[in-house]
Length: 287
Image 1 (cartoon, rainbow, N blue to C red):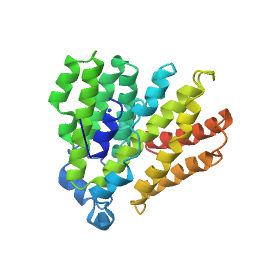
Image 2: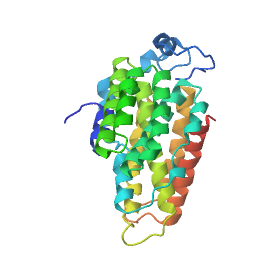
Image 3: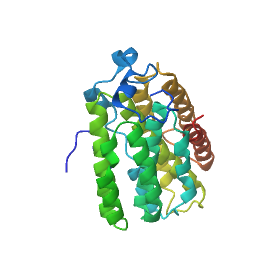
Image 4: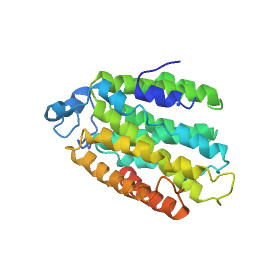
């Protein structure tokens, strides 16, 4: 199976903007495009990244499945508390917040599938469906998707396919509507949550000769971090995105303490985790 789009590629590798929404009126396509605070507003049209450049810039960013597979292979225990609480979906009152949290919940779904913790998936599928609808991507998690989830809820291969098909639809919808900025935030959220889960859960287990290679796996995420920042930098005029970039640069500063000829140590891992956790908390709490 081949795919040129980012989300398709990320999902395949492992098998897988700012307008307050205080009204009860459903979000429409026009709302998303016409908001003066949205990444897709006419004011920001000149800064929208072409789909071709978007795909080129992020082609090397791994979807969380890759790093989470390493955790699973090294027998790092599953930790439900590492996942973003589904109740936090209530904090997503901005279009940009919805997009980046959409990516975060996608990584949580990847975490559940990787560890075959299928009982966790129902609530996360629903939270993701809600955000997809509010971002005007209703086909991503439509009734057919929900029916298939209920039918195959204990089958890892089938659930992987459901998530893959859903995120394929997300990618098509966002790029088709010239909402590449939102797609970039989805990617950033997914990558950040994968790193958060990895650092948090790995710190909870003793370092052994069998799992020590995870230090390098996490250290290597610096390459993806640099690409994520480059991707979002196209939208740095947006206040929400600019704040995210600054926090990501704070994570970069911790990575810069690791030299190419010295393996990451636990102190550095803790420092990176703390920076990641700080940014992730701001995002999921809507701060």
